[in-house]
Image (cartoon, rainbow, N blue to C red; front, side, top):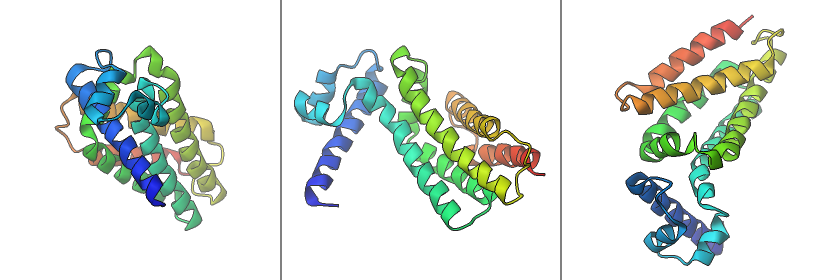
Length: 196
């Protein structure tokens, strides 16, 4: 990556982290773009170079997750891994990612997931996740690993919904139980139902 891109990414990351800290301290509604720019040490123009709106900062966390998931899915498909292997690897990544980003995820789930301005952005990330999981299921069908009568759209929507439900419960219950174990158990249970 060229030095200028590295510098731009560092500024974007600084804005993102400043915003998330403020969202956690003050709440999404009570945080202004001006406060974010002040905390990040950037101008409003710089802010808007990287994020079109305040909610774009908020939704960036989901976009980052989808990029990680996309990498796992594409690598798994390219290396001819089984659907089960890709799904389990995706769950491990998701659990690790959630642990590393717990404060941000807590903010997204408590303030953004149900915020009217976030509807289309959270939907975009959810749709992207569902489509990626659908690719895994479709390939599993081609390999005879997933029941051919399964609706890929329904199967991938169930996997996505399961992920969000478990993650939401984990955050709401204070992150006191092992997220990875619960996600793995649920995916393995669902996978057994998908298997021919």
